[in-house]
Length: 132
Image 1 (spheres, rainbow, N blue to C red):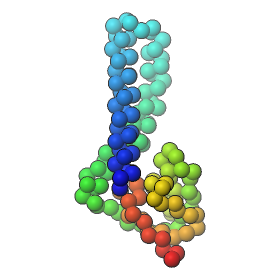
Image 2 (tube, rainbow, N blue to C red):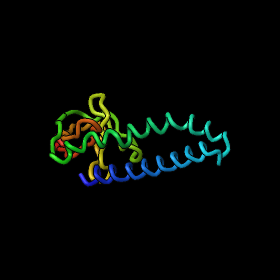
Image 3 (cartoon, rainbow, N blue to C red):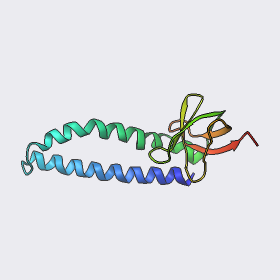
Image 4 (cartoon, one colour):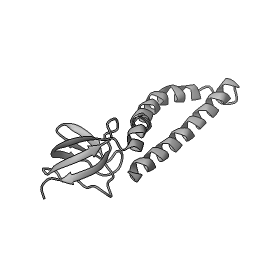
């Protein structure tokens, strides 16, 4: 669970930093202290930043009450795909993508697992290898 909290803190800090830079740039543009071509940068990067904020920060915040209370959902299935660690550290069971701590859980394709996970981010809190 510490990996979940660490990810939440890291992505929140990064999002706050990016937001501060954007607000500062926006303020300077309104005061005509920056070149007007920066408006194009803001217009082009805003959709990417909103998408990233939703997938990397917002869904983790949605799971915060569940993480504090220890409420998880359970699923059992065979791992179809395991993606290279990094990014969101994802793997797929029954067509649904889950996230994991790559140092604590290294699923293997073709093996059956039972997962306790947070409902919004689908972050795996606990797992049991059903092959043993």
